[in-house]
Image 1 (cartoon, helix red, strand yellow):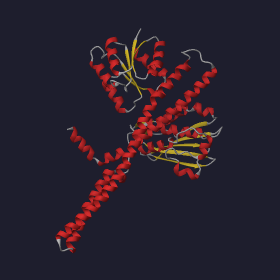
Image 2 (tube, helix red, strand yellow):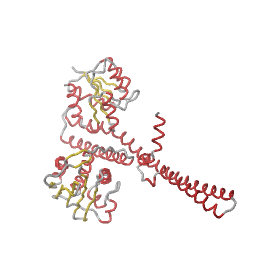
Image 3 (spheres, one colour):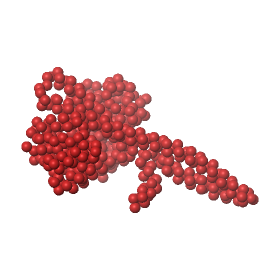
Image 4 (spheres, one colour):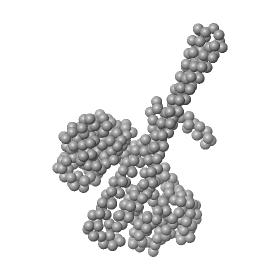
Length: 316
Length: 121
């Protein structure tokens, strides 16, 4: 029974292709089917033409066989190269996943050890010592965020990111996150305001994933805004979607970088000048989550003036 | 004094978590692999078991299963404490009878202790 189920699952081309997170035309199993169809059709065509113009039936048969043979060799070459590509991509994702998991263990140890030391439960800590423990804590948090981002990326790429849709209030979610980012905003004198339309309907999506997107956009807006800047978040309904838009008067994105902004690990030069922290994965992850949510994401920006990032997700 | 059995192969965590639990007034028994953990649970019958999932000798899922099959240990509450966060793992542990599932990376040490206190009542 299990073997039967296994065979059926192997025959499900679309599921196999999704596993590789490849488009259908890059997926070896699908290409195998396509090449097979081409060989059959070409053989039939050759037969039809052959019997019309060639008298000797043996010669017709031979021609068809040679044609089919050549096409088969081409097919095998093409499919093998795509298979190698797909397998390399899958191994890469698996590697990232395994390494990230392995890195989490020592990081948890570090995090809790520092927490214990800073709590004073092992003896009084001098102020100067606290400063340095804070550095360890902040850097282990940075590593933790980077590992989480890498794990999210590998799940996205291996099509294993769970997405559980439910109704939730975008206004409430945004308010909670603005509150969480108050310390960061306060530290850089950035004012964050929320303007929300009255009676906004509930969004229908995965709130924990949308939370990641808002966090990324809010984090970027605050970090890349100069001192005494302003960040304005607007929530409104547009047709059958909730539109979230976040406008800052920060460093902006240079026009030459616009087409790269949602790519993995991409960080604009002007941003690197301002601060070196950040993995360059936030916008890539946000784009993939909104894609999964069947929504849209985009931005408008002017270098030196600021940016407006927005996304729209469906109402039920 | 309530007894907590901590089944975890990372000695750093045994030390850190153990120190805080002792300061909170609990008696702590340490087990560095699944097989020893299972044996300790049967022998000492603790009030709570903190269980990691990725363990040498016997993994946490097998330990959990055997704990719940044994008449002496099946009623001991088990808090799973792990870095595995896939939905499949969470579902599997809860189905096998874990009281709570905590992903280490998502909690501070203080929050873990609060959860322990809550389960022990």
